[in-house]
Length: 161
Image 1 (cartoon, rainbow, N blue to C red):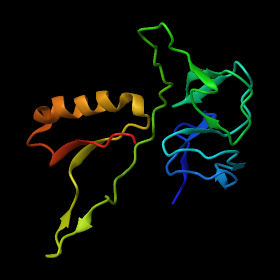
Image 2 (cartoon, one colour):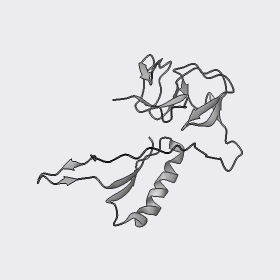
Image 3 (cartoon, one colour):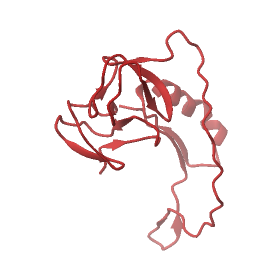
């Protein structure tokens, strides 16, 4: 099971999927990184060295900047980064969208029932990867259940730990 997820290929941080013990080595993409300190589940770790003032990139966008030098494998949190949103009430999100080639569906991820018929889990899950949007995600699920009622088996929010 992976210990980290790099959300976007341009990210210079990963998110710990489990608590990580100092000294543990990982491969992230084609890079070998060793945790320089304990990293709590759900927190960020630097993939590469990040210079003081350099942007911390997550989701392919700058979410903050380094307050000091952050070596690769370091825990990235409020002690060594500051948000780029300080004093702002809006933030432009303009991802570069690239069209994908059409894919002919030949298979689907379903399961076989005991009687042999095929079935799928027909649920919508909202899974935040950061704690600061847990309330937004929960409200999104609560306020939209009636919108999807009868079309899916459920709309659920699984908050970030």
